[in-house]
Image 1 (cartoon, helix red, strand yellow):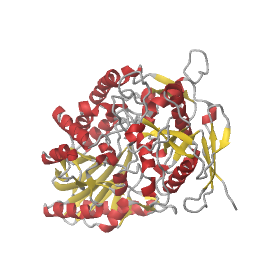
Image 2 (cartoon, rainbow, N blue to C red):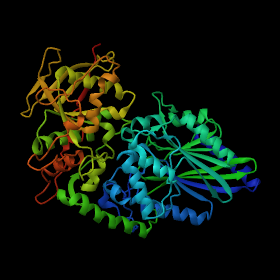
Image 3 (cartoon, helix red, strand yellow):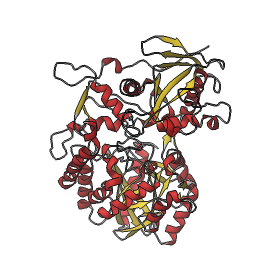
Length: 599
């Protein structure tokens, strides 16, 4: 909808609402906060308590200041919500299982209701339930919503989560009385988010349309004046540039929802997306913006007065008490997580002379961040670990860009922040397996095919170059694979069935789990048998996790973010005594996937 038309509708609604002397309701919302308690980037420039025009965005202390200002402007008529994935994304989340720190702090900052997203389950349902209980014991927390989660009564793996649901810590819906308006809220976790929540098992998620209809009916029966859906499902543009996605379908198929606060896709909507008369809003991610919806309730229903996207920047008057708690918690992160690695949260690591990023909805093949991370993993495994022929990394696990300036440990962790292993160091463990040249081709074929519909599956490689025909048929796009050995020698990979040479590939454990289900994904058309170094099949991918210190009992895991830190530390500085500088060739690096045409 054109902006002029949209604003005209808002203006007419505002006039009508004023004429009937309705009750006002202001809703502030965020989504996909991902534990970004500090502003970024780089964090060294973040000074929330000083009005010095620092260039960073985000930070919970600033968000708290925005909430405080709006509540003072609209006493008794403001509701603050989050659309899911409030955890997982910075070093702070690493301590959540032990501390439950973040949710009570979000409540102090002013949040009333928080939806549960797919990444909130990254520690698994038992640990996540423990986080919620620790948070609730620490202090008051926002109401936690999950309106379509289905537990398995016969599986003990989700018993702890069933308990927090029984205790009311997690609810399917809630009713908030705001300025005399009975406001009902429920949350959903969509299909794509479900596919990105492998560690939620055995919890499953009901289809969002069916669940929405049920929740709307319940809230209507409870006499709600306004019904708001916090939907961690998302919106996106199709190849023609038209808006769509699961939340657009939700608005089309479910009656009775007055507002959809969307999440999951990290989409920045400068104004609401109107679908079937239902406004859909989303703020991007990482707390960089706060959305504001102003509504009026009259006897004739709801009117929408205005919408504003508030940037969370140096113009916000941060709340000092919130920032003080964050600064104190940084010290706990240093002691508990980083000290054994001889690192510190604010430790400067390297200088970035230019921006590095991996935009899932942009030109992924030209991403300089993807190339840097893949090379970092290769270097780390060969210098500090057991070695590999090829390293690979998926776009979906590259979370934040690197902006020009001094990069700290905290900045670099945010780039590769997802997952956990079986040790105290956050992040997915690095794993290694062996495949034949033909299997390597099949892996690449599947990744190219699936990334067309799921950009997070797009993969970057180090020491492997793939020449492919974008117009090639199903599983017939790859024309040539070129392998570069540790000495810089380039050879073409033999992809015939008869060639038995094995290539070792390293990626995080989540990525290599993907390799094990390729036969299922290809509907049986191709098969890849992951192997160990002797060519024996590996059935349990936990056995592929690498040990970076065989002399120490147990498995000493390697992590992608740590690989990035160690790789950058070895670059030369611009001047003696200075920080290492990311080399210029990463500004526009060679592509590991090179499109060709046979026409």
